[in-house]
Amino acid sequence: MQTELSKKLGVEHAIFGFTPFPAVAAAISRAGGFGVLGAVRYTAPDELARDLDWMEEHVEGKPYGLDVVMPATKVEGVTEADVEAMIPEGHRQFVRDTLAKHGVPELAEGEASGWRITGWMEQVARNQLDVAFDYPIRLLANALGSPPADVIRRAHDHDVLVAALAGSARHARKHADAGIDIVVAQGYEAGGHTGEIASMVLTPEAVDAVAPLPVLAAGGIGSGQQIAAALALGAQGVWLGSLWLTTTEADLHSPALTRKLLAAGSGDTVRSRALTGKPARQLRTEWTDAWDDPQGPGTLPMPLQGLLVAEAVSRIQKYEVQELLGTPVGQIVGRMNSERSVQAVFDDLTRGFERAVDRVIRIAGRGSQS
Image (cartoon, rainbow, N blue to C red; front, side):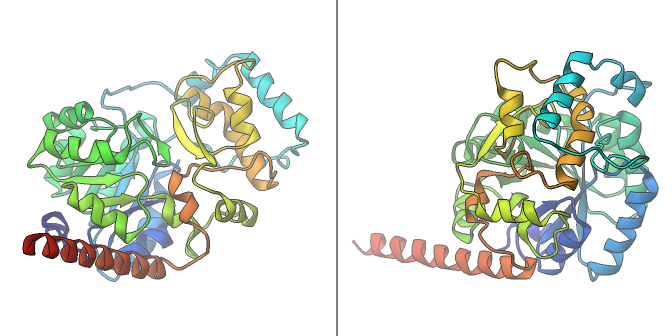
């Protein structure tokens, strides 16, 4: 399952796996793919350095990358406290009322929220890069599109390729003009922040828009057959995220959430602003329903919403409040029916890919003989 891009990066299979879990990222690289560690949850540089040290010890010399969240426009001098002060009291009360309605206990005294995402902040993200470039990462991906121009230059100075996620051909062209190396065409079906265009439509549009830049297909991909389809559409690989959440190496810290993912069907997700303030596909729960209810206060723009709900999400996860418990995940959740190792997932993907290619070859062969 090799393409020009996978050969360039020295990986056996053109499968790029995004995950917040170092053990999963390392296992993806060991299995012959390209593991990409998400950095958004790291609030301190030493935490990221610790996990990158661990990655170095466990990837067996295989390549890997890092995913950050940075706006293209630099925003400096804004502190977390400044942003917190912008959150209306009415929204805070809505959070308190919703948690009280479902009997969600408080965190213990002195216990900090474990879910506080600050990686979107300029200085936090740049501190992450200061750490990352001390390691032999081969790829820097940005979930919010093209990173600032100076970050692209810095990555290239370190011989690191830059990837940017795009939800439309127009976004893809903007990324190409900004000087990035790889476009990740993320369709509507994907988990997390997505646009409005489905992968089957988006992938070939993005390929045509930025040729000869390589495109990775993302969204709704969880089988070898779907990988074969993505490559047939012109992609040079696939970008998979949701599929790894139920692997044995994943560390969700919640057996209840794992069970919920395993039981979910492809229709059990929703694009909601409840988590971050931007439309993000996630499990549909009474929490997302409350925020999407027209009778509610409505969500706040990013990053206010993420800070507003951070402690609430930590409480919901810690106490495994079933009706509120959720996570970002794509529509491919309907195929995530058992806990398997990353290697077992890879084995299934490669076998499915081979079957799909063989089937197309047989069809093409019959056509050429007619």
